Image 1 (spheres, one colour):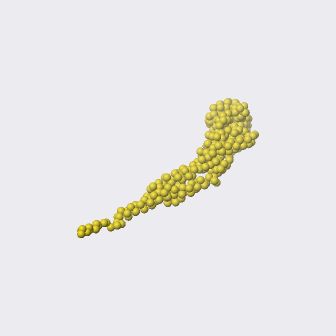
Image 2 (cartoon, one colour):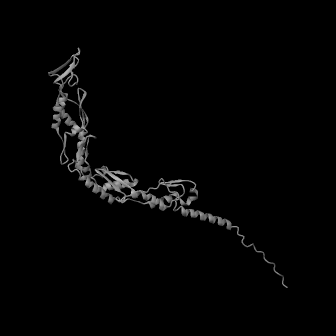
Image 3 (spheres, rainbow, N blue to C red):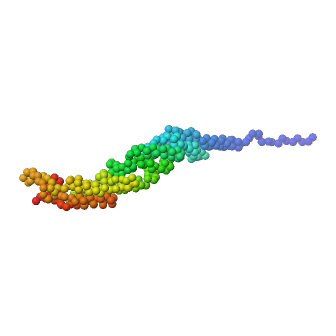
Length: 343
């Protein structure tokens, strides 16, 4: 008989010590990748986007929040004779909320979510409003045409007593609005969704004769003159008075009425300041009130010479002080009273 072979010993079936660690790592990886997938489209807890709480909100929901206010938004366009209200729909306003929301999601860093969950974050991502400039141009052009046709009898340039300057009328301003430039200005300003957009000189074009006339007129009324007599303030040639001496031609020319200046100096101003031959009342040392008249003593201004000085000052466009020239002077200025000295 052949000798029997001893059975060979085999390791115990099912003993795999590496399975548990691999399973743990696999589970952790699955959780991590799942978090990456979730936070690639969902904002993490304690997240604010442009000041709005978007915690655990999806990209789509955040985009809807950003785009929502446009439906009820409207704004005013004022200035240069215009005042109109435009709705978001009329202006063709749009806002790319999807792009903004996606950019914010990328900024929060989905791959670092395990570390980021413990803190809070404030995300600031621009989501500007975009306008259809062709629509804006049409709306502004129509409003400008309507405004330019109002008050046909109104002067293009008028003196404003409150400011002491000449200003262009609303109709004149509206007539010179460049609708294309104005639309671009408005579109740029709408990024922050303001309640009012004001047009300035940047939106005006043409009308050079009008603006040149305005400049000349304001140079005249800006040259105010303080008139002194014997070193004391006696009268003022202010903006309103100067405006009364100016006239405008249809061709944009400006004329200073020198005859009117002379008439005022030799008439109204002379009546106010001249004391030669007038009645003057004074009190004697004994207390008696005396009234005298006639004679050659007192103030007598040289109206013609003063008119020439005022004219030259206005034509130079420089404000200043003029000592009134006189053909006769007194010791003091005291119209209607004692203008001679103590002796």
